[in-house]
Length: 142
Image 1 (cartoon, rainbow, N blue to C red):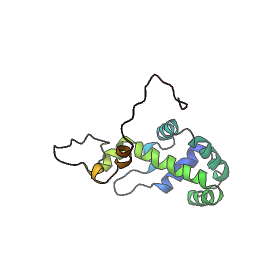
Image 2 (tube, rainbow, N blue to C red):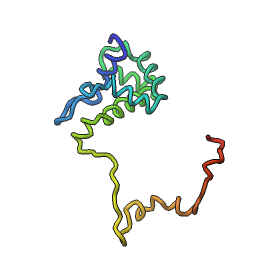
Image 3 (spheres, rainbow, N blue to C red):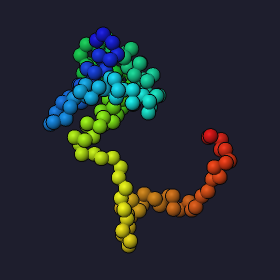
Image 4 (cartoon, rainbow, N blue to C red):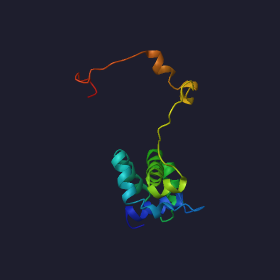
């Protein structure tokens, strides 16, 4: 493979080929705008991507490159999976084809207990009680 772009496109199409009316990863500019969007959201993945390319960029067969990465550097391998799948599902065409409209407000009817409450997803929050943090007071993490 000649460069990172070509290598990533080949890897991505191996992971997400066109199927059942869904585009292949390369059809959603996975190594261009999708990659930029992923690395903007997760800049920590860039060093893993560089390492993955350094370790397996000279392997001509994408599946062999993936297999080699999985054995040599699990973190780089996982980063490639995150970059490709994250970039793919961030694409508006892919989301439209899947019928995913994003998070939508769900009105709660009076007397109806929302599923997230009945499943206990808020139990820890409710158990700790009300909290208030003065926005003017800087914490150690700010």
